[in-house]
Structure formats: structure tokens, C-alpha cells
Length: 329
Image 1 (spheres, rainbow, N blue to C red):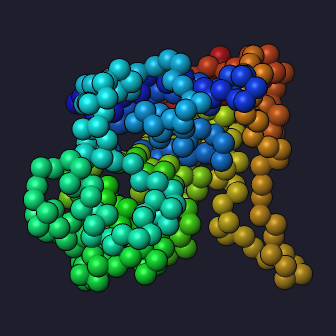
Image 2 (image 1 turned 90 degrees about the vertical axis):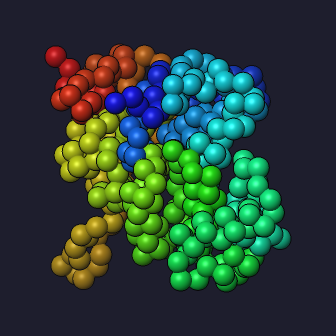
């Protein structure tokens, strides 16, 4: 089967005000099959949002793709012309932003905001656009379609605004959605509702989905595969059940230890302190860290070799890979 999306050795840098080049992604590669859900996991600053922006060539002015290829349905998006990109963005690939309250226009009704996306890609009359918007919102809000259609964003809850962004994303029938932490500001129960909605839409529309998050708990039972980023590098990747239940990289293991699940009370009745990864992720000038494992300063299993060079990818199985000297020959 031909991958829906194939990313090859993607390297992205930002230019600081000083003129210094700061590496944000260093050789990221992966493939996504049609209808597959890939979870991209990592702390803030790991390169997750840069990856989302780079896939659609929406990096800020100081961002630059230095190397690599992004093949979508056989077309290299990094070499595509402006006209081709306009047709692909929103119609074939949709991006869902992190904060719904900022992504939606406060002075426009929801029906118009969904309709504007349709009108930008479909040559339809105004009445037809509104009817298409109503049908899309009915798929996302089956019991409250008309009220949502005529509401302003401030009249909706956070979960409802998140669903409106989903309606905008699916209204043109894309084959791929890139969701950049779309539930980060929602409570746990609403997050579960949004995940169930995506699972339904995936089955109904055969959507491929890249789900970006810092929370491993959202990926269990939802993602098919998980790719873990640290400082712009892929440190572990494989089937979701394998990575989440039997993580091999020390960073992935530490992320899962930090989940606030099953914390027992101590003998004095006080809750245990939530575990945390010691230290901080590398600062923006990542190129100064060359020639070593970037996680080494924070790793409880570090070895002398970790300070001498970067680890190479080790294939633990045909589907599970990790970049760590623990598994080198």
C-alpha cells in the first residue's frame, strides 16, 4: 500500500534575532497509511508544532526547511507551487489549531465560518454552501445543529468550539488531518468526547490523522502508532500499544511515569508528589549540543558514550525503533 504521507529526513531551523541558526527538527522521518492515526508525543519545545507547520509549509518568516521531502499522495509538498498548495491546504489536508477560542473569528456566526472554508474550495452558490455547512455541523452536533449553526463562538463551550474546528477541518472531505493539541485546554471528560468523535469520523470518512500531544494518556486506545520527539529528534517510534505499554527509550519511560494515574496516599494521608523529569529540555540554540545525546543531562541511565556522539536508530523489531545506546551492539 502506498503511504498517504511520507516524510523523509525533515530538517527545519529558525533564525534568531542574533542571526544564529537554531535547529528545531533534525532528520525526522515517518510514513502514514490511509486511515491511520499517528500520535506525536513530546514536551513543549520538542518540535511538535514545528512539524505540523512544516508539513503544510506554514512556518513563520524566520523558519526554514533545510532538507527533506514531504510526499503527500505522491506530491512533494516542499516543492509544490503556490497554486497547488492553495488547493491542498484545507481541502486535502486540514490543520486543527491548538486553541479554538483564538482560531475562530469572534464576530462571525459558526455557520458562516464553516461555510467560508467550503466556499474557498468549492464553486457553490451561497445557499448551497450554507446547506453544506449545516450538514457538516449536523455530523458533529447531531442533536443541536441549528443552535450551533447560528451561534457566535463566545456562546459556545470550549468543547463545542473544538467541535466547530473539527467541522471546519472535515467540511471539504480531506484525506489527512493534522491536529495540534486540539484538546489541550479542555477538561478530561470533554477530551474523551472529542477523541470518540475523531474515531467515529475516522471510520466514516477513512481519515488519516496526525495527533500532536504532550499527554500520553490521550493516545492509549486511540492512536495506531506513536512517535516520540525530543529536541527535534525521533527517539522512539512504533505501535501505540508497544510504545505506551513497553517503552524502551528512557525519555519515553519518564514521560509515562509522570502520568497522574494511580497515585497512592502515603501513611499520613497526604498525596504523593507527582513525578517529574529532572532538568529542562535543551534551549533554542540546539546546534550547540552537537556530538552528544541531547537527553543525556536528564537521563538516569546515561553512559560515557552518551557524551561523545548522538545515538543511531536501533530497530528492536520490524515496527519498533529507538535511538539509544542501551540497545547498540
